[in-house]
Amino acid sequence: MCETTNVAIACQGGGSHTAFTAGVLEELLLECDWEDEFELVGISGASGGAFNALAAWYGLVTDGPERAADLVDAVWDDLAASEYSDRMLNSWLTSVNKLAASGFPLPQVSPYQVPGKEIGKERIREVLEAHIDFEAIPDYCRLNTPELVVGTVNVNAGVFETFVDEDVTVEAILASAAVPNAFEAVEIHGHYHWDGLFSQNPPVGDMMHQPPERKPDELWIIQINPQEFTGEPTSLEAIADRRNELSGNISLNQELGFIEQINDWVEDGKLPAEEFSKTDIYRIEMGRDYHCSTKLDRDPDFIAELIDLGREQGADVLAER
Image 1 (cartoon, one colour):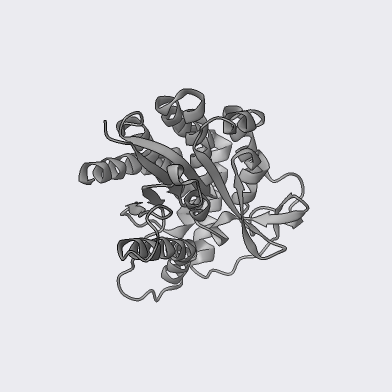
Image 2: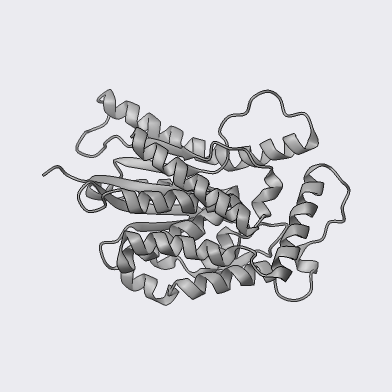
């Protein structure tokens, strides 16, 4: 019998656009042979990607791939703006965000100046806690489960910070999604955290530093932000879009560049084969451009469109592979 291929999956952040990731994960979870062909050794995420990584991981360790696919879909079903009041709020926020990206002068308000609880953050907390038993995570991590990694940025120290396995709490997920101009920072371990989009988007390094028998043979990147851009962005909207995309890709490309350098050294015999091995990198990209304002859009039809696109792209990548 052939040995299974160790796989790590990294889920890039990008707000509502990460519903695409949910579709990709559904396809991978349901169509890959996770018993005889592949073994998932790690899954990571930042911001919205962290929702997907957590749901997929929790479903896998509790009841297998089918449960994981159902759970990823259920989380996004609950996050979508289904009720009338929520749909009105969602439409207003999306429109305001698009006006701001186009350069329209709008009053700037700090999330700390808004009275009452942060509605968006509380909504995320309620959805996640409805599906995930966070208190049980440490118990599952004691088993031979995939490594779970969530990325944030340490506001005070100015460095990347990841939460791994039993340290993944609901607060860690909220920290990874704490967009500075929308949410207050999340305090954990005596310092403050912001959105993982500023840091490792998504985290990769932690999953590569595993014991030799758990090191990924393949790294599957679910990439939300387009890698390439044709021409020159000249309008304020195009500039805002591309700046947003680059902010999410540059740190990822740096990490992948280091892995590719290690791969070259392994091929050239510059590193001992008993300690180092190649990791093949596969990117699963959206292949479709959306305005950056839609990263806040939770319209159910838009979420469904993104999930369907993810399923299609996931199927295409598996067919090509």
